[in-house]
Every structure is written in structure tokens, then in C-alpha cells.
Image (cartoon, rainbow, N blue to C red):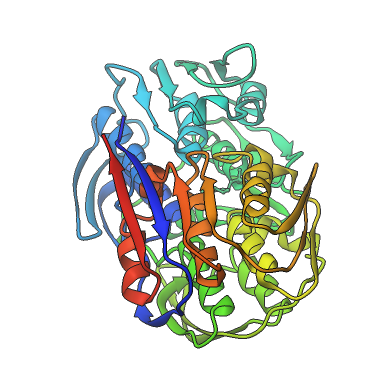
Length: 439
Ligand code: S3P
């Protein structure tokens, strides 16, 4: 158990300067998993040295993959090939990381050995049938608790066959789990998504020489191929940049440049939503880096207005809603979010966690089953709870930029799952956060 940590974010001020936020979490997970089963040595730079991605790294090491680093974002993976993973001696503990658990579940479903996946309290509450059920249709045998949650017991030695799966929810984790299982399945595995979700798995498979066919909202691959190691460059995580995009947008006098941010179009909903609210965000020097689009983002303060968030942006900004709710609280008028029931099954129930905290701070925030209705207003001072959810903690820290007094945020240790050094970087850019450690 890590120490309990609270944040006390000082109110007022503005953000100014230039920074590169840590590496993309989604891409870091995939780099470790795919590098592990590739043939040859994969050198990764920009890797996210945070608990979630490190959980994936540790799991692959437990299965016999030699991995050097991370050191300043550099990791070298000595790939063992498609059939080189070894049975882990003990359960693979994945901490808070849903991506590790769901993607590894797919990867392990077709291995010749048994494995067990466990996680912390939050991860052990999250729904896993969304992956185990389609994997079962492919021939996998995976036990969950009666509630469909972890621990997951994956029985090895099952022969998988490809399926055509129509995903009921727009989930990149489910899509990726099935594609990873599909690598080991006989025949073709196809996944159709109800709305576009992040496509890092498809891009990286392609970059490592595996044929992936994409047509409209469907992606297919055939099992039995191989991956060839290649160097990977992980861009800065737009989901981490989002805190500062909102912070600079709401705090008068702000001007920031965020460098080398991944702007994959399946991830840029936060920019579209903020722009619809009136934000000024410029995309500078767009370029391709290792198969992923990257740019520097310049953001300056602008008064925001409330909007009805178009549902098509929901999967494209799925991790950014905690901080977008803070933008809405600072906007003139009403913001309405619908079609986002998935927020209820993230690291916490993000609709309830944010509505509770915003109400404590004096904002009229009404949760609905699939979203929230927020009236812009004056943010007060107060003590809120993160519910152990990294993005809730960081969102309330950003809210302090427009609060009448300090915001105390309980239980912020999990910020380390995605954004180590958040408080220090925020301080350098103009938002003072005191980090209080408890024994
Ligand atoms: C992720 C996909 C998203 C996102 C998560 C990371 C991924 O989850 O919320 O933080 O890396 O594939 P869903 O695809 O389940 O919505």
C-alpha cells in the first residue's frame, strides 16, 4: 500500500510557460505488450514511468521477458516472439490499471499456460465480462467472481478461433483485448465498434509489421502471424495535457505551450469540446512520430460558455470529463453531458465523484444516469474527495485556479498511476499544490 497523500491547491493565479507532460499511458502499455511478443529488440522512448504502465511492465517480466529500464523514459524490451511467454510463478498484480487487466486478459487467453490477474480494490470492482464474454466465444476459458469481476483465472491451452464481434460499448480496451487474442486464434478476428475509439493497438501492430485491415468501423486481423521489433516513440499524453488545457483556458492571463502531445484523432475530443466552449487552442507543428500524429499545443485564456456536448465526442474524450466538468463550472451558462454512462465504471464513478465535489465547492452540478448538468458559477473553497481516482484528484486541483480559497483534495496517491510529478509541474507553471503525506 502506498502512503496516503492529500493535495492542498492554492487558489487563484494563472498558468504560463512551456512543458512536456509525461508519456501516453495507452501507448506505453501497448509498447510493452507488443514489444514483449515481437521478435527482436524494441527500444521505447517517452515511456510513461507511472504505476499503471509499470504494472504491465512487471507482468511481462514475470512471464520471462527481459526488459531494461525504465530510465528517463527509455525502455529496452528483448522480445520473446509470439510463443515465448512463460507461465508466471504467481498471480499478476495489476494495481489500479484497467488497461493492463483487460488487454493482458486478451493476450493471455491464447497462451499454453494458466494465469491469474488481480488488482486493487477499485480494479476489483470494475466490469470484466465485457472482455471475458467475447473471449469465451473465441474458445477461451476465463473464470471471474460471480459479479464478473477480478480476480480473473485464465485457463491456458485452449484453442482459440476468430469471431466477428459487434461491440455493445465503444471500448478500445475490449477491441484491443480481442485483437490480441486474435493474434493467437485460428482464422480471422473482426471487431466492429459502435463509435470510433482509440486505435493505438491497430497502429502499433501495423508498425511492427502485422497486417491489420480496417474498413469503416470494423477492424480485422488473422491469427498466426508474427511481430517484428521496431523502435517506438511515445508522445506526451493528451489526457495529462488536458488538465493544463483546461487550467490555462479558465485562468485569466494564462498562456501555455504543451510540447509533443499525441493528437491521434481518436483522442482529441477534449480539444473539440473546449473549442466549442470558446477556448483558444492552437495546434502547432503537426508531425508524425512512429505512426502517431503529434503536435505542440498553444492555449491561452478565453472566457468559456456552456454547451450541450455532442455525444459523438464522448468516446474521443472519455478520460477528460473530470476536468471538462471543471471547465463547465467556470463557463457562462449551462453545460449538459449525455451518453457518457461509461464514466460510472472508470477508476471511480466519475459522474458521482465530480458532482459531489463540485457541489461541495458551491457549483450547481446535477448528476444524471449518463452524464451531468452543470451551471457555471463561482467556485468556492472546500475539502473534496478524489475517491482514489487520479483524474478526479487532478481535476479538483485545476479548479483551484478559479476558486475563492484553497481546495483540499483527499486521497491523491493514485495521481502516480498516470501523472507522476503532476504537483511539481503544476507548481512550475503557476498552480501551487502542497502535497501532504500521511503515514
Ligand atoms: C484505454 C481505453 C479507455 C480509457 C482508458 C485507456 C486504452 O477505456 O478510458 O483510460 O488504453 O485502451 P475504454 O476503452 O474501456 O473506454
